[in-house]
Length: 485
RNA sequence: GCAGUCAUAGUAUAGCCUGGUUAGUAUUCGGGGUUUCCAACCCUGUGACGCGGGUUCGAAUCCCGCUGACUGCACCA
Image (cartoon, rainbow, N blue to C red; front, top):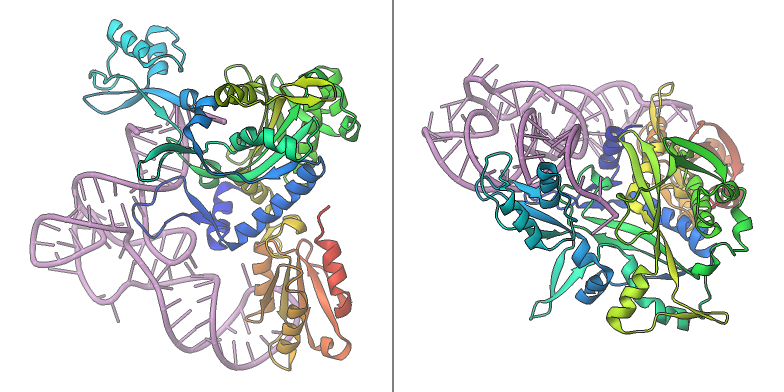
């Protein structure tokens, strides 16, 4: 389905909706998850924990969202996470200083250069506003981090622009206390904050958003010594080379040099296996190796996991080989030791990062799962049963003749074990349609026969087929059908 | 951030140009009835002019500002 249909579903069924919407001064780029959305998000994260964190014996932490200035001085975000901008004194138009200068003079000044360099060039070349020919004010840095003032003295701190910095600064303690051994994955789910200039398209570009990040610490000398590589060597991945998407096993990718080593290939394989289980149409996915100019300032090798949606290719995961950029910067700035022992060798670990955008992933799952069933005039969210916001609807065929009471009884039997929804009112077909729309994979219906032989019907969402089972079997059937793979 | 288009119930829309009724319709939703296995039907009810200011006797309608949404550009760790 398309963006518009997903948006409509999201608003009508409270998957997500704009934040602070009752006030006129609500800002763009902030959205809330309603009950249905939260339920899918929690299940998605549980799958992520199973398929990545637990499978690879990673450690999960939950760090602060507000972090001190030093963290971002060391990480480079205070210097590099900012664009040089110039503003026209006359008409107020704002330009990227480096881009405008490059456009007019063909001189490339790196965006991280001193602000005076931009001012100097603008004076020398007599660059004026392209719209009104007005003069420019001196260059400023627009930093995409949100500054916060701490305590009565308003001390400088920032909302984290990525969750991973707490993983880096916590690394020495975690490695010691958790008896770490390289390679070691440390994971975190949480919110990050970026002051985007133009947030857009609901969950796809937010100022406050969820990330699920994994930082794998490794010995850079042992990137091809990885026993567990055999677990995924035959997993096929889709990887874009030049303009063509090629399908190959992880082993082939390493052998052909498409992926630089087994270590990176292993995690791209794991990630592929994870996303297959989310129900995203993997034939519309690709790993794309980023060029020099596209990569983040800390990345040595970077692959984006992207999925094609009705509004184009969407980056769901950034996989960056960050080398020892972060640990050495934090070691230098903090004067703490970040080296660890790997058997007899003392190493400053390198980091491979798997940085997942949760909001975008959820959007993509919805878009790829939402189907229009024209024959039966219904919208169906064919989401995997283990990700469905509601597992099962519990319905009475009619309210009278004691069926309502019997239905309540069944609901009470399963309500703490499954996400269940009790519904007595209206036509049975309408109630099935409502459940289809929020992706409930099953509906239990109590009818007159139930009173005679203690059986109910179970209706399946996708093919609308029904079969009759004994109430005593319900729990085991539902447990089996809604279990994680 | 720039430009264009737009903003009316949960959702989708009419009305605006040309100011003046109880803001209409569809759907959804709540209550009741009837029927019973796929959005049927009947009765009934709740529910909206994004925010702020101006013009006017009177503003959903005209004007200004703000905010947001969509599309394109730019940006995107």
